[in-house]
Length: 18
Image (tube, rainbow, N blue to C red; front, side, top):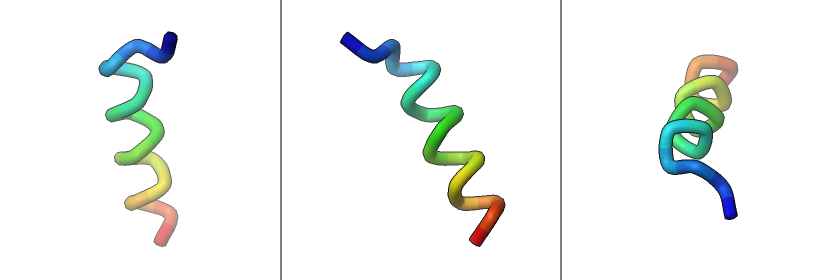
């Protein structure tokens, strides 16, 4: 199970890259 915090961080990181 992925932690919500980790999931959000991944989303933010990917959003910043784009």
